[in-house]
Image (cartoon, rainbow, N blue to C red):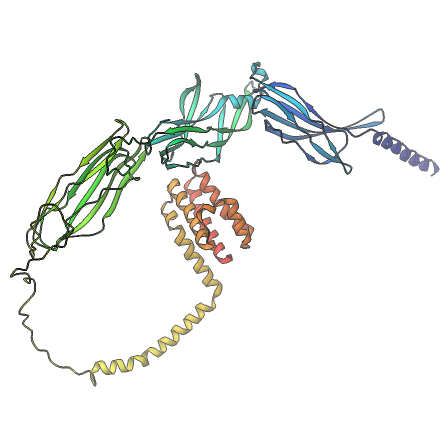
Length: 592
């Protein structure tokens, strides 16, 4: 028993001595750099090492660098000659974003209640340096092999002239792109914009900077500048997942690929929008830019009074068809003219809008005679010839064959806004019957008739029906939960009706779904469309005490609507999103 007691005491004393030896070592916290001078195409490794375990590690902001990896953590512990050695390291891999001298600032760590700081160090970034292929990292290969480019059709367009922007992703044949997602969609301020959906990603073999590449079109948009001067087209940014070959080989000698992510951006592009010339500008110019044809037609030229005809003013061609006004008809005052019905058949291609727009007037003549539809003009600017053009319609004569006459009916000269005197003739009441040939009818008394007794008994017969109807209404009114469910379901169907029609077409479905979700919140929470960011929506729903599941479901649907513009979505996914939207709107209506 005494021997065991001595052994235990010796062990305690030995551990105390070792602990004292370790605790006697001062605390260190240092920053180590893999190199102090590097090229802009190289990578920098930064290690933060401490000899005691600590908490609340706070790294510097790494100004002038982009964090590729990190922080990765490693711990080392060993015993040498009875002395314990401990080391803990946080590691970052950085890529420089510009040339120059940069300072890696202090990092902090809390060790045993005290805060320790590393010393700042300076790093110089030089121009790109040449390195053997074997020294390239996975990120080096990704940077060299992947590019996002915005191709612009015109850099100096006229005001309201079409500009096409095509976003292409170029990838080297040596890498494999597995997925991508949009990080930031451009906002085309000062432009009228129209997306041209990309329904299928077709990979093309091409060249980039003189090297063989594969390219795919990710996004197409047609812009019509609404302001002159220098305008900026914001960049499209993507997060791309890809596999990059390494220098390692597998058992069979095949090259091993490494998975990595890279953020690519098309970069800011600027165009200089020229104003339309003032020289030769027609007085009736209303902003039409393009190449157009112009016509005025009538469905009839011969008709009777009180019959109707359709006078149509039509413009067709290529240009900003949705951004100008159609000339108005100036018709004689003795013709009754209704407000025009606007029709358009316009499609947007890579060259801009093309198709036709028209106003159709319903005209009803009142009197017999001849009435002119006078010639009108339409002016537009042709960017190809850089000149204004004016087109005129021919005069159309409307001949009213039968009807009452007016002293102004045969006036085919200039139209006057003064009131015209109607000249009476002997047959102006020809459409009224002068001898109606009326005959007397027999007298019938209601009192004492069959109808009298039927109306007298009707209230008695309705009493049982009224009692049944009242009980039914009370049963329905008492079912509060059921009424809420019915009302919520009707509301969901109302807002999602357009989305349901678009099932099967990804673009139209998700556009309608996003609009339905926004309109529902706008009506329910009484907020403006400009406030519809996902963070704002989540905050508003939290304020209304909406449960987390419903709130996350609503925000998730909005994210799906955004992702659908750049990612393929199946019909099954669309049906699931539709069902989810109906369920979320129903749940929201119960809680708000």
